[in-house]
Length: 158
Image 1 (cartoon, rainbow, N blue to C red):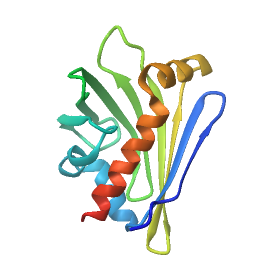
Image 2: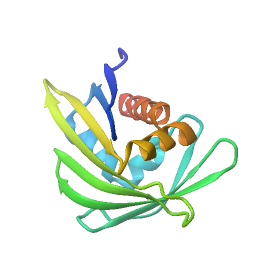
Image 3: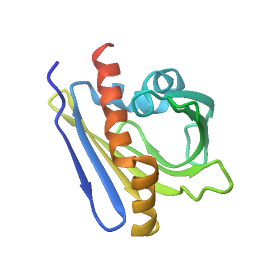
Image 4: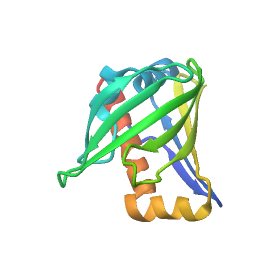
């Protein structure tokens, strides 16, 4: 399979990742909302993910721990805002650590394009400074791109 085309754009308070997957839209969408799928690929290179609970509905919560290759655990919480299968997924992301701000708003769109899927993932932060902090401290851009690389590999193997 050829490497999927991708772009990354950074604006004042936003990071936008766009990737074309050589897979049907329903499969790509389901890979984001099914805990059996997402546990297999989610996270940057070297990370694993433990799903603590995943209730995919508006107001529902997904709790998970990302285990870093250095042994550090990163507890996370997502609260779903909008779900339009298989077109749109909107949620708020929080760090579960009370000392860590780590909140941002995510809007994902899944567009069908001749049997392929164009995924756009917009991460919107409260301030540009918060976006910069997440980019610097957590490698948000590189980590996001690696996560989408892992999703592409997962989809290709299915």
